[in-house]
Image (cartoon, rainbow, N blue to C red; front, side, top):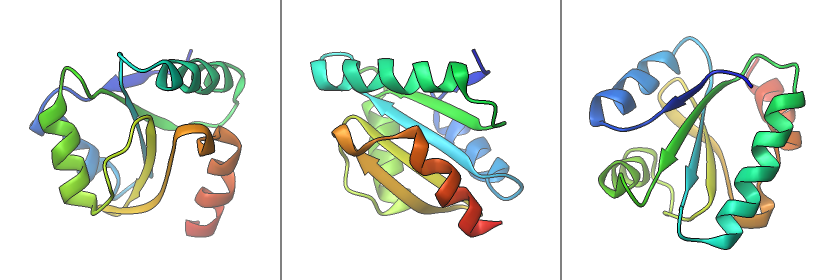
Amino acid sequence: MKNIKELQSTEDLDLLIERSKEKPQIIFKHSTSCSISAFVKNRVYKQLKSDSQDLDFNYLDLIQYRNISNLIADRFQVIHESPQIIVVSKGQSIYNASHLDISMDALPVVLEKIS
């Protein structure tokens, strides 16, 4: 599986924002207590395994790190949802989707638009 970075601190989020200035960053917010979130996580991780793209993927356990989830919602001006995927480029959210609308297939289209 590709290298997945875990977001566990405000410093991790600050680094993600800095990295987004060079390369888009993907945040996957997951609730460990939600069956829909578990289903979507399994689907996303399966697609990540088979995907040949070089994506910077960041995972947030929002139950354990709710404060980071709240910071993400504030910083990127997105409504908190779970599960949720957010694409950050140049320090800004350029795409987000939640629940069953999350699809790794949408990411190449989103990333193509900013190239």
